[in-house]
Each structure stands twice: as structure tokens, then as C-alpha cells.
Amino acid sequence: MLKSMLKIGKMRWQEYNIYPSNFYLFTLNRIVEVVVYIFVWQAIYNQTGNAGGLSIEQMVTYYILVTALRPIILWGCNEEMAHSIRNGQIHKELLNPISYFQYYFGMEIGEFAFATVVGLATFVCCAIFWKVMIPASIVHFLLFIFIILLSVPITFSLQMIVGTVGFYSNSIWGMQILRKAIISIFSGIIAPITLFPQWFQTLSNFLPFKELIYTPINIYLGQISLNEIGIIIIKQMIWGILLYMLAKLFFNHAVKKVTINGG
Amino acid sequence: MIRNIRIYFSFLGASLKKMLEYRVDCLVGMVSQIAFQLIELIFIWIIFQNTDNIGGWNFTQLLLLYGVMMLSVAVTDLLFDATYDIGNRFIRKGKFDTILLRPVNPLISVLGESQTSTALGYIILSFILIVFTLMKLNITITLFLIIKILYFGILGGIIIGGFQTIFSISGFWTYKSNEVVWSVFQLHKLAEYPIEIYNKFIRVLITMILPFACVSYFPTLNYLGSSKGKIAYIAPVVAIIVWFIAIKVWNFALNKYRSTGN
Image 1 (cartoon, rainbow over the protein chains, first blue to last red):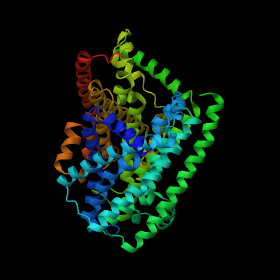
Image 2: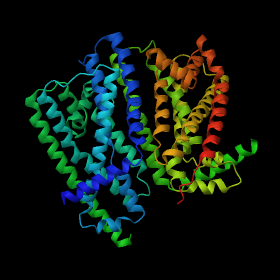
Image 3: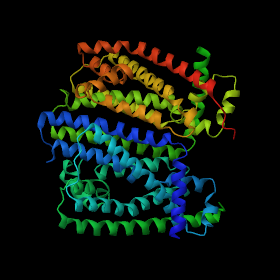
Image 4: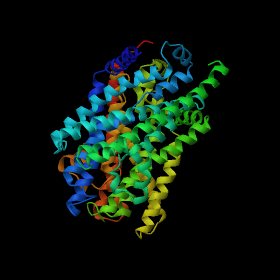
């Protein structure tokens, strides 16, 4: 089962690499996205010298890491899923010897691998232009990687939920944007969560999104003490399981509808 | 020329109607687009929690600059959205061959396929934002000013559309990726902030090479009554130059076109 999932992941990976130019363009794009934020913050630091308790080097590193992590968190295959629902290809995918969720998780592995390579390339390119800080320690770095891996079930479940909306609506384009907007606002993609008002910080403590971007980067920067991390890991696991169950329930409910209508 | 423009608008009308067919999708799209705009606004708001000005611009002035850019971007979305995804929508699927058979300029056919009805909501929203911020800055709203806002807004949209058309030809070679156009389009974000905050390289880039500054920065200075704002009046010249290059480049790509054959 795992073997076939990896195989599907590899197919997805190869699909991306049919046009090698894709890789360079994706990377270039990420850099274009980050430039404006860095310049704006540099202008602010020139006037105030401090924002939210982070130094300018930390802030620049924060945004470069955001740009590197963003593809990992936001990219996914829910567009393909909605497409397969719409044009009836789903009936073939449901007959696969592996389950529908496993099939798409395989795709997600390929997507994840490609996003990671783009993220790494973006990070290296940005390190040439700006001064990037190295991780606080080896332990912090390993925990940084671990928390990112823990976010995979969460992002995957969200993808499946949005993809399942394809059963009810003609296009999930709007839902896609909504998913991206919610993640962007609550995960700290816009700015470090500490810069937001208090009520927002409290709210984001309960939601799973903060742990996708803000927490790993702060671990990388050494801003979070190691004994807090245990709670974060437990919270992530609970959210991962909850969202996965939700996605599964929603899908199982929706798929009945499609069998009745005959595809 | 006049005939082409007329055909273009009738195509555009047809595609917009196609989009409006799916009312729920359209509504969800509109709401989420606004949510996406919120991201930018939240960022601007957060900036001003930490400082009272950026590059000498205060919160209201920056909102105005943002609104001016948003208006032009919305016009681009409405009129030239199809350039964004030529490779995927037309060339890879072989739809481009049908377009070549029409007795109409292929560029007009492609542009006419634009279907972002959500842009209409944007145009109204950004226009309200501009007028509101101008009023807050104690600038009297005259009829002349309103005409100027609309004039520069539409002209800005045409300029950005020109850039998109130039870079959309990448679709002829990559078939799939719209990433080149997206990169260029993303550069408009640089011009959402005053050019004072950038280094020399980026200043030259957004004033001379890809003059996004003519879309937002100079018109905004113009509305604010600054002397530097007179530079905004070269916008029509910029638009003509950009579209001259765009048509030349597009025709070049057209000659090189090889069908994918499916």
C-alpha cells in the first residue's frame, strides 16, 4: 500500500518535471513574492528599530522562511480531485485497489516533494541577497522539520474537504481561494502572530493554522523554549486526527450522492 | 482597429455571460476574492501598528495608493484576464487551432475569452476606497478629479494588460505554465508601496523597465496635488509603447506557433 502510494507520488513528481522550466519559474516567483515584504519591513526598522520584539535579521529570516514554507502548506491536489469528480473520472479512481484517500495522499507526497525542493531553492537564492540566520541549534532545526511534517495530515485533510465540495458545486475555485485566505491570515504568513491584536492571538492559539508556519519558524529562530514544544506536538496530532475524520465523514457522505446519480 | 475593438467587446460580453451562468460559484468567488484582498489590507494595518509612516506616507495615503493599484488591477482582470493562462487554456488543449481559423485576429479572440466577472465588484470597491481616502485627506472631490481617477484607472489596467500580453507568449513554449505571467503580475505589488522604500535596482525596474509606478505611484501623487504627480500624464504614451511591443511580440510568437495536435 505504501509502495503504491509512493509510486503515485513519483508519477506526480515526474508530471511536474516534464517542463524543467517550471522549477526555475516557481522559484523565481517565490522570490518576487517576498521582495516587497522585506523592503517594507526594512523601511519600518529604519524608522523604529524594533517591531514585535524581533530584530531586522530575524524578521527578514522569518519572511524568507515563510516564502520557502508556503508552497508546502498551500499547494495540493484538490483541484485535480474536483476535476475528477466533475468529469466522472472518479468512478475509475474509486475502483482502484487502494482507497481514494490513499490515492490522493500518494499524489500529495509528490506534490510535497516538489514543493520542498522549490522551497529549498527559494531559501538558498534568498540567502544570497539577504542575511539569513542559521537555526538556533541542531535540536531546534530537527524540531522545525518535525513540526512541518506534523502539518502534513492537517493540510491534506483540508485539501480533501475543499476537494469534496466539488460534489456540490461546479467549480471549487472560490473555495480554493477561501482556503488559501484563511490559512494565510491565521498561520502567520502575513506577519508574525505576535504583531496581531490580543484577541486574534488568543483565537489563533485554538486553531491549527498557527502551527503550520508561525510556530516552526519561531522554533527555528529559537524564540520558543523546548518545554513548550510537547504541548504543540499534542495539539497538532489532535487537530490532524480531527480534521482527517471530518474529511473522511464528509467524503463518505458526499460520495453516496454521486453513486445515486450514476457519475 | 475599430472593428477589432468592437469584436473584442462582443466576445468579452459573451464570456462574461457564460461566467454569470453559474451564480453560486460567481458569488463564492466574489466573497473569497474580497477575503484575499483583506490579506493585503491586514498587512498594511499591521505595518501602521508599528510605525506612523512608511517612506513618508501615512496610513490613509498608503490606502489611497493601494486603492489606485487595485482599481487598475481590477480593470486588467476584467479586460485581459485570458492572457494569464494561454498555455493551459488554449494551446495545450488544441483550442488555439480553432481560434486561428476564425476570420478575426487571434489576439482579439484570446483576449475576448476573459471571464472574471468578480472584477466588476472590485472596480466598485476600489473606487469607493479611493474616494473615501481622498475625502479623509481633505481633498475636494470635483467632477474633474473623478474623471481623472477613472481615466488613470483604465489606462493603468491597459498598461498592465499589455505587460501580461507580452509575457503570455511564454505559453506558446511551455504549454502549461502560467508562472511567467504570474511573476510579472506579482511585480505590481511592488508599486502598492511608495517607491521611496526601495533600492535603486527596484526603482529603475518599476519606473523604467516595467513602469508599474505609472499605474499607481504617479497618479496617486497627482491626486494628492504633488508637483511630481505631473509625470502621471505620460501614462498614455507608456500604454501605447507597451501595446506596440505587445503586438509585435505576439505576432512573432504566432509565427513560431506549432500545434500540439490534439
